[in-house]
Image (tube, rainbow, N blue to C red; front, side, top):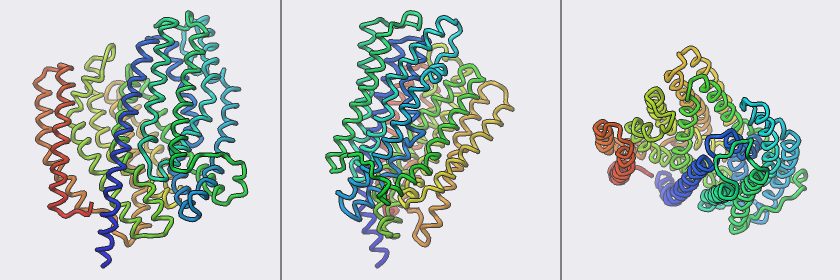
Length: 536
């Protein structure tokens, strides 16, 4: 009877988990593609100039600052709080809780905006100290200070839009939350194109007019504002429009959420610090920052269209089960999420591992296109192929712990990952300043994710006992499907060896071969799970 009940619960949630995961992955892919387009257009219009460097870094300063306040942890903390409020007092009560959290967060963000504006000359100095000529450096400092002043209010806008995203996710709506960043990217692209048309392209700091900085600063802030409006519209559609309230001190539920948010800041801050360490050491190798940063970008892009998409979709169900103290339903939601995360990540691991050389051949351009970097980049992408699977398990594990209102272990996991990264990065200094050092720095990312995943999984295993931890049949089905796909992946590798490094041929190979391989994987997975009898 118990087994039948568990199976029924898993069948009930399976379709919703698959649908929501696909929604998050699809719209996240759209956002990532437009983000890549944004980088390409900014580079094409502003050119290889010191001003382009300052703008590229300056307009993301508010997003980086908001990450230190809350960042991606906001949804992991707020969604379970809103789900519990809905379960305890309905949507009206959830609006009160979200409004209280919003009031607190906007108050903190406003203070940070003022601080960033006061410190804008210091921030601008970090963007321009590398300009060698004193007069140009002074001009760049003034223009960058002006840019920071125009973009600083975005910290408040990011707080609003992330609250809107959390509200939608808490109610099981994911499309607008995942797709709206594409609108921000498109508006910024149009702004940069307009600025180039009006003022000219490829201008460096000595020739950049103040009007160009104003257009870029106002345009980028307007792009974030439109994004925030879309997220608030999405929150209104689910009945949770954010109406900030300053009465959060008198509301125990709101105080509990804000305390968890403060305690969880390190979950996002430590990975950011670890990435900074890796990039700083990568700078000891010519072109090294490109290799490590690109590897890190591929790592996150793959994760967000596979395992991390599943974890975001699974969080509301995990939070509801935890709120009801329903161990059976929580175990069912966890097994579903873990199974789908592995199912989504395994084919990407296999494809990237065998096509890493072809991908590196396509990504290395211009002055960076030589064997001293293409070879290490290919090896780094192979390491990233494994890291995205491990990182996905880490992410869904910490989502499950946040659903249980546990923030201590996720925080320790991030701290442990940072420690591993620092130790591994320090060891990289013992290697020659060439590609081997870069590969070791990317291995440090994998080591950090392994440590973090082991920490959260061990804690989950303890709190779930005696519930079954994993659906081994479903995981076995994913492994069988990957093995069935292996001949297609091997054929892709063989064809790459024959094309002589032709980049167009490699691009066609990755596109067409990837589609065929994923199609074979999906068909094999359906058959394997049905034959093995997996609950997922």
